[in-house]
Structure formats: C-alpha cells, structure tokens
Image (cartoon, rainbow over all chains, first blue to last red; front, side, top):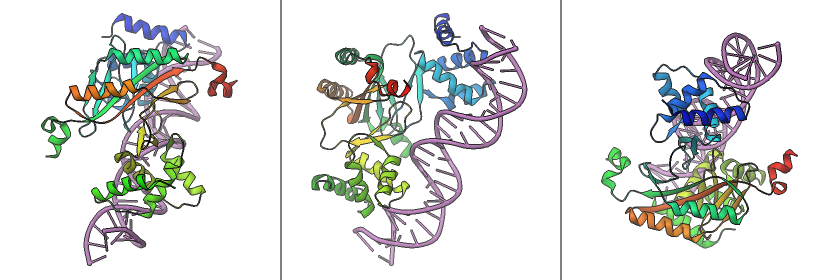
Length: 152
Length: 152
DNA sequence: TTCAGTGCAAAAACTTTGCAGGAGG
DNA sequence: CCTCCTGCAAAGTTTTTGCACTGAA
C-alpha cells in the first residue's frame, strides 16, 4: 500500500488542478508504486488486468501522465523505446547507463550532475523542471551481457 | 554537398558491414547534413519529396539508422516526442535545454559532462557509445517563450 | 549471378480521442 | 445536477515489415 504522504501529494495535485479523486486513480497509483524499476503503460495495464484490477488502458495512460506532472513518477525515453516510468518521489536523483547490446539499464548517483544542472538553470535564469543524464555503453564483460547470453 | 571526409566515413561503415553503396543513401546523407538543427525522419522525407528527390519513407528511416550507427548523426528522444536526429560529426559534444512550455530546444556545451561520462565508463569498465544530458525547464522570460506568444 | 536495397502498401506498435454512461463535488 | 472520468473501440501517429523488383558487387 502506498504511504499516506504520497497519496496526499497526489490528492493535493488533483485538487489544485480541479481533477477528481477517483478509485481508479488510486488503484493505478498503488500498482505503479509497487513496481520496482522501470515500466511502461501497457506493462502496468497487463499486470493490473492479471490481478483482476479492472481499469482501462486509456485510464492507465492518462493517470501515469498525471503522476508525472506532480513528480510522483519520472518519465523516460531511452533511445527509440516506448515511454517508460519509474518512481521518483522519495528517491535520490540518479542517472542511467544503458547497454546498447543487451538493453540492461543500470542506475547510478552522481551529485555533481545535480549541481551542474542547477548552475546551468541559474546562469540562464530558467526554472528547472527536470533533468536526465544517460550514458549508452557496451558491456565489456560479454559473458554477463544479457543479449550476448541470449544470442549464443 | 557533403564533405569528402564525411562521405568516406559513411562509405567505410557501409563496406565494413557488407552494406551496399547506393545512390539513395548518398541522397539522404546529403539532405540530412544540409539541415541545421534537429529533424525527424518524416520531415526529411517530406523535404526531399518537395525537392523532387524520390526516395521512399522506409529508406529514409533505414538510412538515418545507419547514419546514427556510424556516428554521423545523433539520435534524440526528447520526452515522448518522435525520434529526432542532428548532425554529430564535426561538432563538439553538446547538451540540450528543453522548455516544457514552448518546446524550444537550446544547446549548450559543458566539457565537465564529458569528463564525468568518461570517468563513469572507466570506473565501470564499460565502453562508451554515447551520452545525453537534457535539462527540462520553463522559460522564465515568458515574453520570449514561443508557446506563450502563440497562446496570447 | 547473387543477394542486399528499394518502393510500396500493409501491418505493427504505441498512444490518443470520441462518445455514451456513470459518479464525484 | 453539472461536469469530469471511465471504458471501449476506433482512429491517429510513428515506425517496421513483407514482397516483388532492381541494381551493386
């Protein structure tokens, strides 16, 4: 179950923007925050379906968008892929290394990046909304590269 | 017309990978490198069509992919948008600020980011392919925000 | 001669939208 | 009771694929 704090963040955002408080929105909030790591709208929809939570695909798409708007989730677009989400609230800022061979995503923290991002916005008199840093790599250790294992 | 150097980079890549050297591929190379800034596959296709260069949409998609693979172009995915490209070869590494209101993209250089990226890869024993740093902002100066101007 | 590339249209993949019925404020 | 939300299906958007033909090596 989602913490009261997060639930209240969501409720606050909905009220502030004259959006209604509905059961479906809470079901999706719960389901999304229970996922560890990255997921996309359709994966979440299928998973909820499998657990007999009946919400429509359209509602899932719309609700994930709302949850990004109020910074409960972060929205990612790794090269060419579909839109993916991950929990943002309660997490430290972090970045992603993506193996272009096996698509494995590894997270890392790097506080200096946050400083750079703040500095850039301050220097340009801009209000920050978000930032991403992605490093595309090839796993050096091919034996552990998921794609290598699958192909060989 | 594209420089011989870039043309040779492309030819080298094609030969190395047993891809054939075709006129369509050179037409697309030329057209893509003549665009200043960011573009997507369909924009390029339409533009070529308008200039009576007859290549198919499918060939444009495929060729842009080849040109990314050999680092003549960089492939971008700004939040949720379609895949966009820009010339990489002959340019210094640079990053992007994207206004979430007007979608204006501003480029900036920041050598420290390259150092961080190299360090991360070295520390993790990974071979770098590429990296991106995107800062999503709201234009502070609303008078100059494209979207503001359009809506008001 | 061989096989990859091309163009076309069709399909796939992902996301948004229109509409009728239902429920929150 | 007035809207906004939901579910569904349909449509929209972007990209990929199958196939017959063409042309590079």
